[in-house]
Length: 96
Image 1 (cartoon, helix red, strand yellow):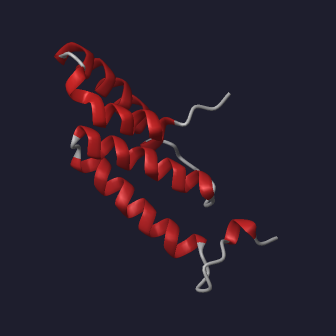
Image 2: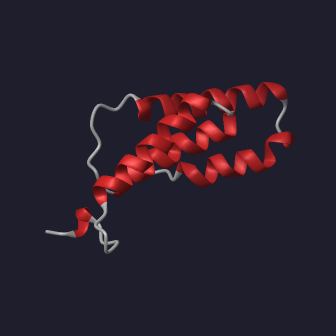
């Protein structure tokens, strides 16, 4: 079973005010742990998994207001777009 973290992270962002301070600290620490593990991955194929990885890091960076994560995600997405797509908008990972 795979977990789609993005909706969970975004839901937390929308309802953060309903969490106690202690709960916020726990949730945000958990989110940071996930993002840091993704940032530390040595290799991810340059396909939709890379895009998902950058999305997770970027969302956590925005929710926790961590500039390092936001920049990592932004730079990674720019690199992904420049290397994974052709000018006609087809994706390299779908070409065999």
